[in-house]
Image (cartoon, rainbow, N blue to C red; front, side):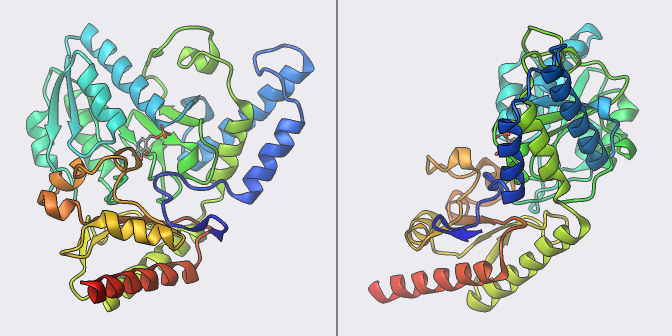
Length: 379
Ligand SMILES: Cc1ncc(COP(=O)(O)O)c(C=O)c1O
């Protein structure tokens, strides 16, 4: 989206609310919805809107509405699963967690903070975990396996069916963090062997502060904190109905056509970068990856000064996950892929949305070329 904010190519950090979703939110706030737990008409009206949003999200995820729970975002959903699945596991003598080395901080840190024995899955140079290693690590002590669906830095997709089948065979629960994947890839959780799936509003052109958690019917999960019986007892607290409705509307904006559109932008970007920078290095997987993230490096050029120069020209891109952008340490994800520290510090992540135009992609590549030419002239 090009505006006074410039060209925004950091959708993996947060994707701007679509105008139609913003208008919907505005109408909802003016409509004075009550508390969805109240029995009067304002409450019943809110509950009706909330259940409609749950239905809509259920359809998007291929799940039944009562498998969908609203939370404040993906961080909270991940924390609920890790803490609660471990609690249930401990009752069965299972005290081990298996997670990949390339999880988002909200899984890595929740695992570290838990009392579980944490086992880590390595990834290959494209960012895929190895089913063979998972098979070796799985055992009678495994309570939960958590492997993110699409990585937030490289976009690499994992094979949820292969992972889930292995978990089923060993009796372990399986969670996937789908914060980046929802909307960008076809999904049918009803036909996927997993128990929990995390998602977030602001990664799909919806508002910040709302997310969700799919919990397969029949799998019990307790709350992270305690209070009322909202969200089937899983997530106490008054549900922000307006945000939930807006997230459901945003999720429905992702169609087969919009996925094709995102993929075409990726082809365009990759081709333009290759044509402009013969030494270009791509990080991640070329085929099994999201259609809206490209992670690349220009060898010999650290990302940070390039990103600052792009920012000065009104183009917003990123060096890695947003949580890491404040510090210059190399990304744990890229190191896990086998990159050296210096190579990891060269990585630029570009991510776009359904409101990004082909002209903006071209403008990005042209700006990068101009910046590099200027720096070579100065040197
Ligand atoms: C893969 C992944 N998981 C979790 C999160 C956290 O999401 P939220 O901001 O909704 O808590 C993010 C956001 O960067 C993410 O990319």
